[in-house]
Length: 272
Image (tube, rainbow, N blue to C red):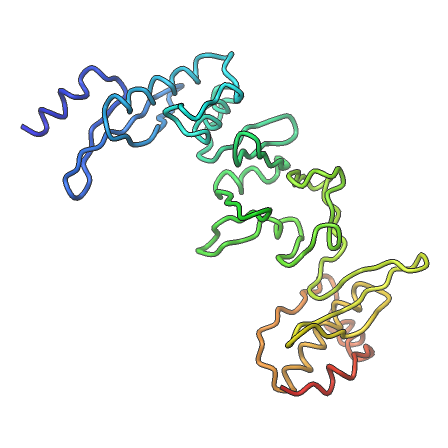
């Protein structure tokens, strides 16, 4: 009897399918098939609401005059779903995340007015990783952890815009690699320019910030930070520091640079 009632409720509503929660509560799923692609349009409390979502989805896919500016909060579909459907209509590919393909880039819509830009090379990653926002920081869930999207571009979690990196065109939502200029790629290393020369200052945080030293190259500074970690561990500091990974340097050359580097007395003689 209950199944017959649900069938009657959805008989005159194409694209609506009844379903039940574990507690027996009935809800209604909306979906459609377009270009042989089955697309879910969400769950709704009444068949009428689900049918409105179905009609809205069909309208977006078949009316080329509809654009993002036509979106309103009264829409039965979320703005994210609008982006997915309009991209499928215009570009022939459906993404589960709010991605719209452009020429030589793609847009990731956080909202109707907050749009991130990426290179096509990053499309596979962000089509399968949903971006979340906290303030001006963007994260994805990866292997159960929140990962700052800047790490894909060499931007450290602690990096400060204008100090460690910059957006060349001034647009902090444009993550295309040609628009990113990374100045400080290593932990604890900050680059400054003095009298036309670059100086790399290394700091490490123990109970407060300590200067490890100042060095003429970024490579020396990165290795000096690692040396400071080793010294602190020998002195009994148990803090879990992340060492710098030095790519393309042989162990012999690394050891040669490491042994010649001076670090501050405050680090050498620090006691917990």
